Length: 309
Ligand SMILES: C[S@@+](CC[C@H](N)C(=O)[O-])C[C@H]1O[C@@H](n2cnc3c(N)ncnc32)[C@H](O)[C@@H]1O
Image 1 (cartoon, rainbow, N blue to C red):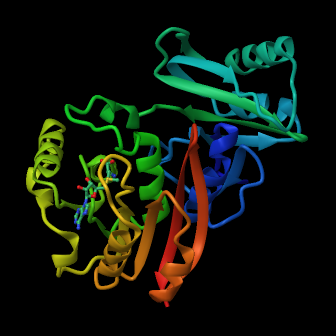
Image 2 (image 1 turned 30 degrees about the vertical axis):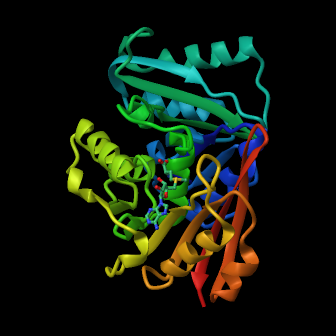
């Protein structure tokens, strides 16, 4: 029996980037908005995962599940039971309500619909019923209210996704964001317990980034004012959100010089760019392993994962 069922949600223009993140977390291809696996994953790391069902019992027979609950004398206080809709198998509303009642009835303890301590959930996918405890807390939105932000910052959703694409399941990797702006990526990585350092050449921006870190209780020195081309330390992976020249002039030659500057920093790069820089990445000795775009209105960002050959 598989242990976990993850429920995904994304908008159509996020599908490609969500699939890219999925690949680095589960090492599998994403076929639908639910994923059944034995792999535990802290689902709160991904902005695309609505929740995780920790499966207690699955069976083609609904009665088997009821029997399991009865024979295990399950007893919980302040619980509720919900039905999780999925895109594969439709169970109509009245039936789903009745199934929830049928599950709740043999569980001893007390029901609390408003403020449950435990959420049990059931769902039917193809011919199989899944019953378990559902977890759906969102922790990442807590970083929304940064004291300092600027208009070309990444948003939190994109920043978290970049971190996941960069490290996958290896939270021990040492990460650097060498053009960190006001520290969006740094903050998201820190919130996942990742060892990351950030740099920005601009004095004011680096200062504001440090204030942001302090605001959330992190060591401000994780961010330094430095030109990334002067860095000498080695890391495992770089997340580079390259300056676009949208508000202040930044030529393609300057962008290339920053890309060159990545070569001695780490063997792996996750690049955010407003144009496809694949040819130049390859010229520098990178091999492109993955690419997706994120579109906001007319503005497209290319997210490219590359490794040094
Ligand atoms: C696109 S912004 C990064 C935004 C950032 N990801 C955020 O969410 O706030 C690029 C940043 O690179 C910085 N930058 C430009 N040249 C640099 C260099 N040589 N070394 C370090 N930072 C640099 C700029 O000051 C700018 O803040």
